[in-house]
Image (cartoon, rainbow, N blue to C red; front, side, top):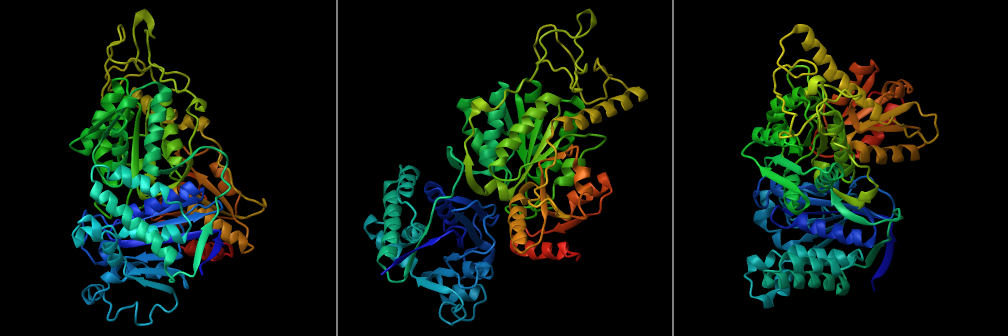
Length: 617
């Protein structure tokens, strides 16, 4: 008889070939967990190739989900359950599974050929090498083919539904609702009723197998998390970023124009915004990165909210046009969804190594604001803030997210758009100079120049990339004027700090002497690491930066208030280098560049050593 056991959290990883539907399976399980009311965080991990080599470790695609009845910050670093569709999936992921964890393996693919392909001399499901785990060898493919036998599919096509069989089985095992998956399949395969019905049959067969088999002696349940009251939805970083840009355009009462070239992991921003034509959004898929940013800047000049999205390689190509936007002092939002580099690097893996490029990667003195989102849901608010700054200060703004945030998901409280303050683009409507002239570089109290939409009667003017005279915007090669304009452009960016909230340290006892300072997607791993370290009896403070340029006004004071400061980053210490130069504080760097988020399992003991006075890297 199956017993019901209540758990506070579970980490599941689905793994198989890149064509086995692991991303879809994980996403569906996540949606069902959201419906239950769990807090959750996800980590999709897949190869860059459209169709990676079957049965190889390089071709393994996985989706990890951490769901809980408490507030969580990471997708978990030690899976409790591994669903392995073939030997490659088992071998690639076994090292991460906790001792005593559960393995559900599809025996159909554990053939001699597939075992040899990944270096197994014997079948690990049979040779005792997995005795430290709870192993459930099941013929998922065979049971799937049998379940869909009435639908007239060939074996190859029928076997593709094995991910639905596995999903059904896990849905039963962890007491998830079934209605959402049935509704999803009805919509996804509405025009393919045979495939729809086969997948529904496979899902039901998996659920029924879990309910009737003696393989599982325990069924599990994870109660809803005590989330703040409100309307929630499952959201990824790229989706949230897109909605934030749309919200900014709505609050500014401007049409949104996105100029973009498809590039992993930023392409979903283009995909999402292309669906919003009925909301005043225009998307332009350009022939290259340079054309994309040029079109976005042109749209901004024409009175739209100009946006471009890309990743590291595209940022390098866009740098000249971003410099032009700095010289024009024209609003522009540049979204860099970072990935592992340099060059092509690892397109589907995450990294934070574009910080230097964002801060300094332009010719001449070309300052601009740089913001970084800390979680998938925070991408919305960071994008909205970028729109506000771009329009208020007449400047390009760089928004940094990364592949981890872009593809990861979490519960997101849907904001009330009416409560978000309006953004006034403050376009000029009448002459602002003597004798009825329009002076495009006459500045307001924010040092922001006057902007007139082309075609506004009486406000004809000229702008361009050549240095311009203060006020009039006329071409000028005067040395004193150039220095004045360089300093004015810098001063304008510097005074954005008036709108930047002070940096706040989370120090529960108020007497920690070690500070962990993060930026971007390290927020979740830092929060979880700090929790574990505090449970060990050590004291540690944490703080996180959204505004990296300009930094909060009190950043130096916060850094100097602690005996030791450590900055975890998915690069070789770029923020740490920047802070040392700005504040002459001995900031220590903790670097990981593996294409994966920083692991609290590794960072926690290293942070304990750091608190105890040891050097760590």
